[in-house]
Length: 412
Image (cartoon, rainbow, N blue to C red; front, side, top):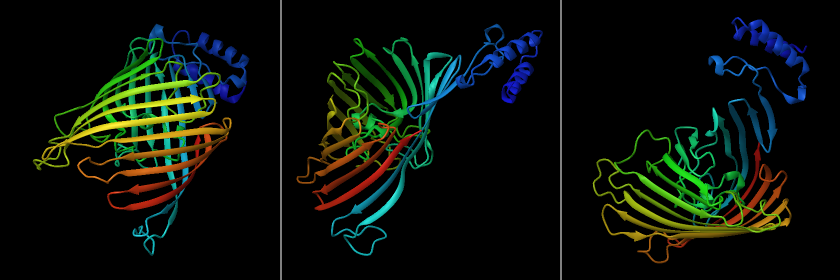
């Protein structure tokens, strides 16, 4: 008998110290001797739950698609690390001097660990009870706290057991904006566009009901949140943020990732509309009539189409903002992005254009982003090399800049 299996058998006997310990030890020893080492199984132990304990339980460990999975009788744990290493060369306007440079207009190259995340996810007791915990070690994402590594911590109960009606509580991304809801490892460019963080705040603490109905062709989400930054212990004021999103996928599930790895012999289409209201009036303590305390309402729509390596994505936000003092104003934004595999599932080229208007009360103050990208996939999104070049313009301040980004992204 292998030493590790012998040790496991002895531990099993000690844990199950009752009148049947001898029988359990014999059964465990016979099973361990006959087990195939490649199956990575081990004898179960007494859970302390009396007759409900699974004395013959097993666990199984394997790695697939960038995840380590541990399967047990009454639980499953998936572990994934995501890391992106990035080189950025900032090339500012001739009138702008970047920190650390000698002259205005000088470029600034730098290396950075852009993302380093650890995710724990799975189910416990029953498969309809799932959880997710994600920690960020390289700095916060949009909407996350600067004082805590915690990004996501959520529990979900699939009350329908068919994904038709689910309830999620905790801290997670609010359902607003397709690109913000897409995982960072699935992006076509090194990062999201200039609309991200402006119209989609990222993570918050709250509760959401969601599911897929109509033969899983319709996905809906509706939730209530604090309306402030993540990892806060309380709300900023006495009002909550409300979100809703409905998406229609007539030809199959598209998924929240960019590029086309999904469509094979038929096209895929997803069309969605969204709503958000976040009233922050009164959130600034001791400052009555703060112009920064806005009551914001957003209506959004987005569409994505994928077919045989071609992908097209578009998104529009219509935003109305009302400060505590002064009149209401509109601040809209939109973007579209297209990509095509020059070599199927290996080499991809992409284009993006994004623009938003800070306020319709001022003419000629739009901010825009134009970019091109090239991606080389070694193991799809789990291991890839990315390079993009983008041009940024601020019409209101008559400034322009460009930026070159090269990064590798790996999931393991």
